[in-house]
Length: 398
Image (tube, rainbow, N blue to C red; front, side, top):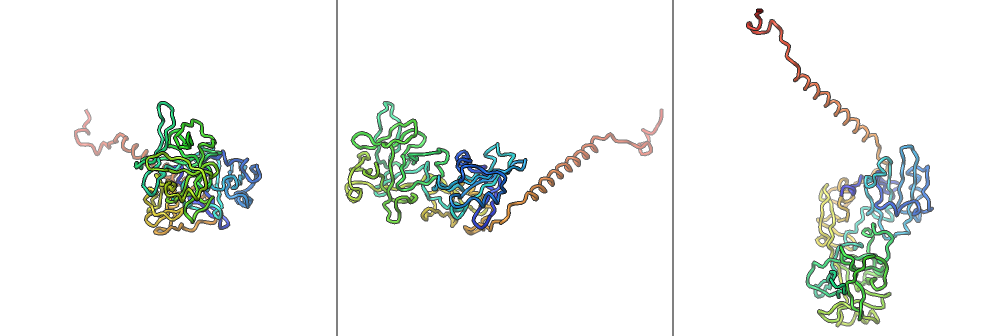
């Protein structure tokens, strides 16, 4: 994941973190139409561009061309309030068309935390298990039947049944994986790598149904509601939560009535159904995802299930865990033995040092070539003997 190895950012006005030579993943959804004013502006410096990103703006980028022309893009945060743009940060090399421009991406860390301490958050497209915590059984993944008939959904003792949540209504498939699942949001339950979605079929039973085109359909959309008193509708779902699965504006709830029977819907008062001991209604999630943490200066992987969970956060060896394969580059400037990063510079990095380094390398390279050429020339030169220094035999003239 080379493109995720970000450079060290700098700090502007105590809240704006600025990454030089860095862009947002899927820039097509963060173009000039997505700005606060509906257009990109030209002729502004980087600082001026950041200064105008207020109130409804929490992220943006500034581009400078070789000609000196600039483009300022201040992105609305209201379009995707659940999406922390720091998850989307990539080195500009992701886009070959940016190779000849200077680009900086800036984020308001009063709104979006850096680094994002969300290792225990359930994101759309995470690979996971849905489990009944009381029996230790798992919702079985689907498989396509040859005759095309729906496959009813059961619980199984096999923990290898991987699932994932998809957005029922999505505007950009590319960024789903950066968006957290929230209680009350409409979701689809999918078998990864297939077009199978959990669906309501005949007699209100749940089955896996082939859906080659992902689009909104009522019979394939569900909601999670929290069973933990500390959570409410609108809160982010985390691994280890207890929840129920509802349907049709929470008028029905997914249950297993008796062991060995398929999952089905029961309609009625939700509280009454939840309190009915003959129904299995409580579920939880096990993560199959990998997180990353700083082990000294190295960014190392750890299974999400193996870390210490603290709400949205996760700790491993006393260090916070993230979801970026290179830890957003913070291992290079983390205070060793802590979760704190070294203070960021309040001025942008100067290009002088890097230019000096490049010139130095060029000089060393040229000098090395000259030295090698001189050595080879000396070795290939034919020896020139002085007649007086030759042995007597070679000195005779015939």
